[in-house]
Length: 350
Image 1: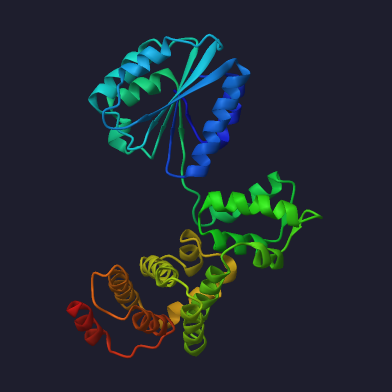
Image 2: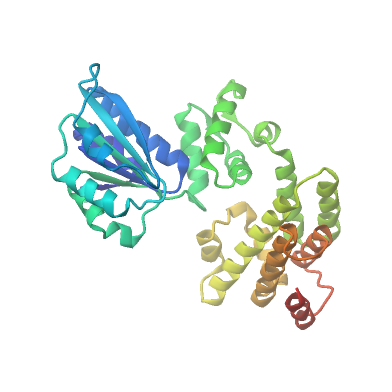
């Protein structure tokens, strides 16, 4: 079996169609598009029928071998697709897959789709049998600095161009949701009549304006503008923004600051630490400014406070969520109403 990245798949498909493919990963859009590529290549080779099976508790694995050896009256070849949602076929499933892969039928292509497989799964007998028979496409999430590059590539594939500011804004809006990014690019194709995408166009067209306000809000807190950040927080509450969204935005920034601060403490330069933790160049001054005010122990404390707020949102502790969000906002802005030891005692009481 060849172990392939998604960007290597097209070249491999042009050379040869394997009898078995396993597509594994936790990014739905990339997994879907990878499977689409395999199906399209198979159709060109005469695999005109597709049979889909969802492997759940009680799944009859005999269906795999029966289906593999039976064709409809209307198809010469078929794709047999197995979706194993937990990535574990179990003993019966493992034996069935091993039996299948020992002698794959010429008129059937087996496509196995799973979430990310851990090391023990990849060392299992069934996986090694699949490994010997076909190709393994491993899907990795697009994170940090990779996301703007992926968006830029997607926009270019759609026949458009975008400024760096526009790409960064879109990346911030969709926050790693590649399916949402793909949908927004399709929408922008209708708006960008000249093929040029600007930041203003993104701000005016991308959904979830409340979320954009959330990003503006956290930027104010990072900048240390406590008065303006609290004012924006009140505005978000008044507009009906879910407290979960506000907490997510604050916790995201605090977590990034904590990771960068830890890397610096381990001897990395600020620039290297920021880059490795997905901080874009234009946001480096904000992050650097916040790290001048907040020490690593304070950031750990803020993460604990964020966890406490999460519990209050879920009803696991009795507290005024928005009051606590305001306190966390002030803390991120550099304003602490209690000394760290007193805050720790307060948290312990929660």
